[in-house]
Amino acid sequence: MNRICVFCGSSMGFDPAYAEQARALGKLLADRGIGLVYGGASVGTMGAVADGALAAGGEVIGVIPEHLSSVEISHAGLTELHVVADMHQRKAKMAALSDGFLALPGGAGTLEELFEVWTWSQLGLHTKPIGLVDVGGFYAPLWGFVEHMVSEGFLRADHRDVIMMDADPAVLLDKFADYTPPAAPKWIS
Image (cartoon, rainbow, N blue to C red; front, top):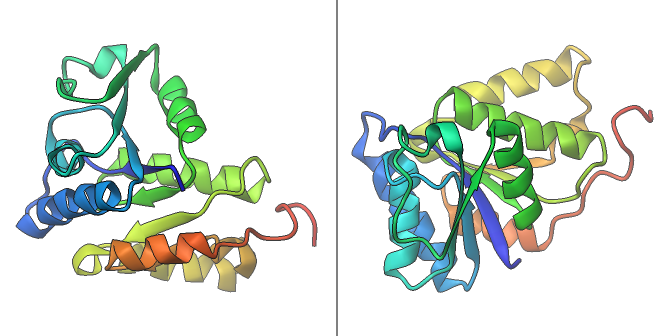
């Protein structure tokens, strides 16, 4: 893996562990020689993950839409910063630059980015691994709902299994190395 896209928040959240894990993830990626691709901001856990990677000498590529470059405050110290026209271009650019995806705790935007790459995987548009960094059980309620989608027949188990979850991002990166995507896209039974 050359680069991992990290979806995370423009806020820090209430628990200091969120920012600590974001910085640690940035450092982990840099220590493993994996570049970071993320939303390009200097605020929230976005800024923390970038700062962690930069402090450890890692490559950090930010992608931010023009309308958010002043609101989310573009990070000034990145290896590369791509300013794009809109959110659609942001997500497409981040996906194109990345070999896999990790989601730290975040809000609606983080979930929206996560669900889009997950959907793209279901449709066979990419075969890249996806992981949830489950800081303090943050993603446990979401995972319960994912299991409910499977039990109700709206999600196949092999498409659930596209998403890996662990509190330790090092474990997720190790799993990424052995990842095998589902054999068939969504519409094939």
